[in-house]
Length: 137
Image (cartoon, rainbow, N blue to C red):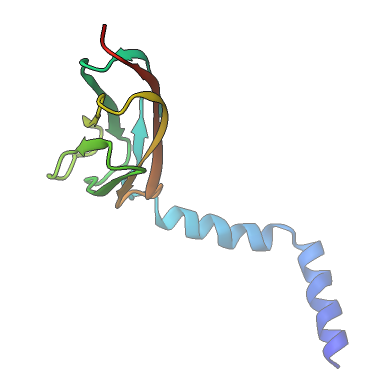
């Protein structure tokens, strides 16, 4: 009996291939009003920086969703970076930026990750910075 039900179920899935996809489309449509964070760039190369230099970059983003975007937290892969982000909600179709400062007292090549957590449908976005800090002359 169980085998017969299983065979009928598989048969129905093959005959009506749009059935599972229709349920998936319905679930996706439920989130169409969710905010979405879209970055102009997700990686930045500082190049070679003097150890007395300033290593600051602004990652520009847009809320391409229909409701306000809230950045909940920004985590960095080490304590050598200081992030700053808007604490107020970012309205739909509005641009803003996330500031990242790298500590140039740490000499050598670096590849670091910044994780942006928000209420967007793409809730966690990874940004990357890299460069090489050399001793001041």
